[in-house]
Amino acid sequence: MPQPTAVIITLGCRLNQADSAQIAEQLREHGFRLGEARDQADLIVINSCTVTGEAGRKTRQAARSARRRCPAALIAVVGCDPQVARQFWDREPAADLVLGNREKHRLIEHLPSALGGSIGERDTSESDAALWPRGRRAAGSPPADGRSGEAAVGHYPHRTRANLKVQEGCDFFCSYCIVPHARGEPRSHPLEAVLEEAHGLLGRGHRELVLTGVNLGLYRDRDCDLADLLTELSKIDRDFRLRLSSVEPGPIIPRLLEAIKRQPKICRFLHMPLQYGANRILRAMNRRYTVEEYGELARQAVATIPGLCLGTDIIVGFPGEDEAAFEQCLATVDELAFGNLHIFRYSPRPGTPAAGLSGAVAGGLAEERYRCLRRLASRKEGEFARGQIGEELHVLIEAPTPRKSGNGWSDNYLRVCLGTLPKGLQGQFARARIRAVGRGRQVEGTIET
Ligand code: SF4
Image (tube, rainbow, N blue to C red; front, side, top):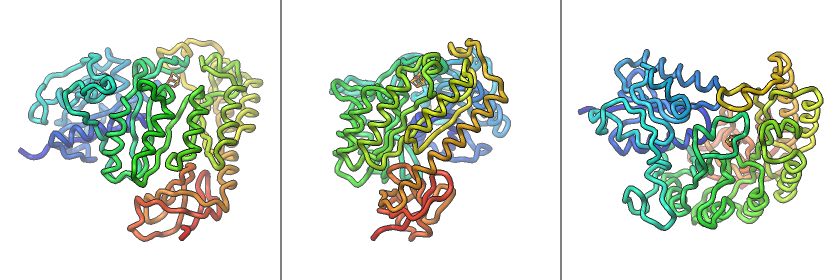
């Protein structure tokens, strides 16, 4: 029988990328060849997103387009959108197999035997059995599926960086966010299993591991929190580095800063979502801090770790945003030393409390405010990049020639252009002296010998 081909389409966030890498590895283990050409696939997996109404629409579009381009393929729609829009997917003819987040890691068990699995029927199960790929187990106890301490190692072809998913779920219920419904309650991957997966990824040649979770700061395994986990990971005796993805502002931040300060393997990067720079809107968003509390953590971060890149997210146009709130938000953002900003336009997500709030901001005004904040964000990013001129940065080289994203990334999250390099340097670390700034977060540098 010819080897079946699978194509995985990943929509949405870094966590979905991590989940897709796990699915890819399972498919490979079961004899699939992973490809990119949808029209030649036997199986198309759409790992969906539902974070906005638009993301859900794109998932549906992806499924229908896959069906048109490859009518013979088995199309599996998995993840967040089926988890919250089950009734829609149960009726959608473009999908042969529909699995929510709690079942998507058992995809292989649901495939027809011709494709390497055992079950050939449409399945819309949402059992709680698979809270984690290969089973969440109590620390120190044998894995639920009987494998002796084996961790699922994600498949990231051709990448110097790999995501290391350590946490899943959130119970913060920010008023605009559907994620707690899509991803469920917080739960953490046991320390031993995280270490095992880290070893596996490093053994495959990845040089940077990005710790990923829905609400990473909630990581907890017995008395081990996220800061302890970072410290344990950095003890692995290999030449690599660790990066944190987004962490909510909260009591874990000072402990993380201490870990970053102590351990050179941990990148000087902290992405701490602010979401808005005025307290009235933060309350309406059901965020758990004030602007003042956030500011204190942000100032502590840049004071504790010289050269740290502080990143954040801001949502513009939330219901009830008036001129005074927006001005305050601009002032807050301007005051803090951000080096990386993601600005989003608010869009109501059906099913969230914020979707029912009055005081919607008119589209034109929201757009104007978005552009205004975007300009401020570019200025802040430029200031941070200029502040690095003359510094020697730790760069992970990703390509021999500078592409759109330069040759590689510094530990403090700048795109670094180093000119044309010998091919053998790909995937290597280098010390680079920064000479000039380019566009956005791009800088130019030369390798120090
Ligand atoms: S912290 Fe808030 S925004 Fe983040 S996933 Fe949880 S509910 Fe959503």
